[in-house]
Amino acid sequence: VQYKASEMVILAFCWVYIRKYQSRQESEVISTITAICALAVALITSALLPVDIFLVSFMKYPNGTYKDWAAINETRKQIEDTVLYGYYTLYSIVLFCVFFWIPFVYFYYEEKDEDNVSKCSQVKNALKYTIGFVIVCAALLLIGTFVPLPPPSRQNSTQWEKVQYLFKELGSRDGVAALSFSISSLTLIGMLAVITYTAYGMSALPLTLIKGVRSVRYERLENTEDTEQVEQRIGKLKAKCGDGRPLSMRDRRTLQDLETRLQTLRRQARHLEVAERDCCTKVGGALRPLKILLGVFFFLVALLFVAALFISNLDKALHSAGINTGFVIFGTNLTNPLNELLLALQPVFPLDYVLITVITVYFVFTSMAGIRNMGIWFFWMRLYKIRPERTRPQALLFLCMILLLIVLHTSYMIYSLAPQYVMYGSQKYQLQVRKLVFSICDADAPEDQCTITRTYLFLHKFWFFSTVYYFGNWAFLAVFTIGLMVSCCKGKKSVIEGEVAADDSDFSDDEYVH
Image (tube, rainbow, N blue to C red; front, side):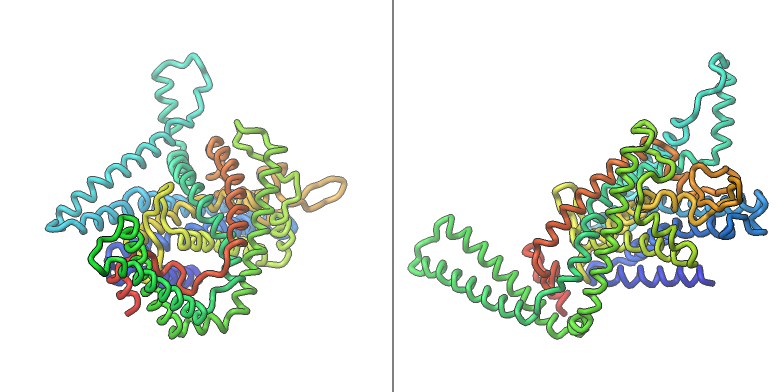
């Protein structure tokens, strides 16, 4: 019942979020449903890690012994397989969304912009472009299936024995390697999105809440003054050609820029007028103390996040087996604040699970904030803007695809923050040294005494991905630091931040205002 209730809450949130940013004029049923479902898949997938950690921890008592129902290996194996099948299912859905459904809907909508195109032609053209994504997915699955195979034990095996060995290995894998390689490849793209959007969102969101927005009345007064100054300059330029003399090239260019600026100021004036009457603006002013407290809380979480990530990466740099092993490290040699905090909260059920869930949700929502503030970029080119009630369907599809990729990288980021906890949760085992003691599960624990989370097995299937993730963490820390400095230097945001731009049309503006 609780699981069904959580699904309903996630779907309701996704519907509200998509409808809030969706363009009223360009809304399309198929793109709306796709965006809502893709966003829901991203949020549900992000919940896998806390559930995985909870299940492996729930098998044991605080004294390190297995509970009665988990004492049998077959029972534990069934639970592990259930979690693994959950990963299979959701990750397969992610692959389907990223490599087929979202590209198909995107190209289908793009074809709709063409005049005199039938539905059948739209579907054919969309499928034609989507085939490229399907080929890439198939290639990743094939590479993941064949590349990591270990060599046969006997070097002098015949060709037939090698073929038999190949099929035996492929049959014993159950598709784990292929799926893991495909997901890890997508996670590399997700890592770039995390470095770009999440790092900025994590630094900008807390400071935005703490600083607040500018006063609507002051902005309207400033807008009126700017409008009068621009109108006066336009009047002086037009007066030059009052006697029939043409304006110089420089004056014509200046006049065109001023007229564009005047149109933008008038649109800003209309938006500010609406904002001043809007009840949400008044409620936001009344909730200002709560926003400050929330901003301080988010800032402290961000500092904890960054400190834990830095210490974890430093630990890998100093004590790991090196670059050829993916900087894999067993146990923790440096005190990691987040890992220690999670272990300290274990005796008070369920505080440690609440904290790991909060961190996961915080990671996702700061990513959404970063995408919303920056828009959709391709290198140095901005493709789409994310704005309330005026976001194009293509932009929403891109947003959901980026979030799917970010969620895939979330598990590794959280593992970097608290490696020991992500591997074993709150499990303990009994150790007989002169007297019976209880020790926290780590890499030195007997294999039959501690159960490793399925997340960890997925993360470390291929060492070379872990190596790239390691350097990606350093890049994340650098971008966060730069974003924090930029956010500190910036002033308060406008109450209509991002709602008006020079390249907006009056039609789209009227759609929003009315």
